[in-house]
Picture: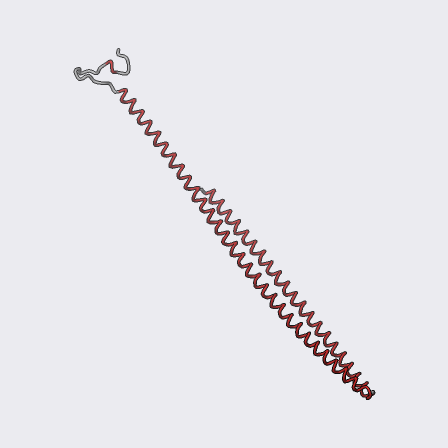
Length: 205
């Protein structure tokens, strides 16, 4: 029984060690995923800043072109109407660019929302997986305990059967001794004060 208990304790210790290792691995995986998300966020921030810088550069170039256009407009009064038309077209393109920028921002926000929802679902799935594994481990522990109790019950049953067999053997031996005692006991003749010699198990003198 001490050996079985030692084995059970060893198995439980190994199970706890495995659980600790699994939790450590899962923590490392979550840390890696968090770092990956952080890196992706940084990359998106850098890309956004790059796009902002490019937009600023384009704005500066547009302003420079506007100044050049103004200078040309002042120099060429005859092309004022054409310059106005070009300005209107530029304004339309600017508005379209602004609309595209807003749509891009909206799509970016939607992408971020979807990413957050996906991460939340992933975390929930991990939590459910951990709970399922805990329940599985508890079920295994209960199964092992039940097996131990069953083994002990079988041992007690076998011991009881052995004691029953020994008791039966002792009873049979007692009966045999009783029969031998009865056989060895001489039968007395009621008409004589001496025992009947012919009834004795040994021959007379």
